Image (cartoon, rainbow, N blue to C red):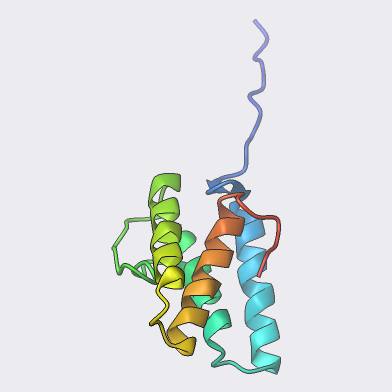
Length: 117
């Protein structure tokens, strides 16, 4: 009897292969080192990528702890939190930029956007 090879699928984080998320994180981190490492948008995006990769950190906006890579429902829940914060007209510029970075990174990870921060 011949064994049928099973196709290998890359591990997904949201809708993206884990290798693509890792590459996005590393690319943004390198760009940040040359620019402003304290820019709130970039900080939010980097924290979102780290959390999405299961780097044993809390979710960037809600502080939720996850074990390993968060599932799609948990990722989209964090996007929803970012949307609520972005719609808050009393939000100051720094926290708004941080939330936008989280939103944009996780929207890309989940396949809701083709624009990668």
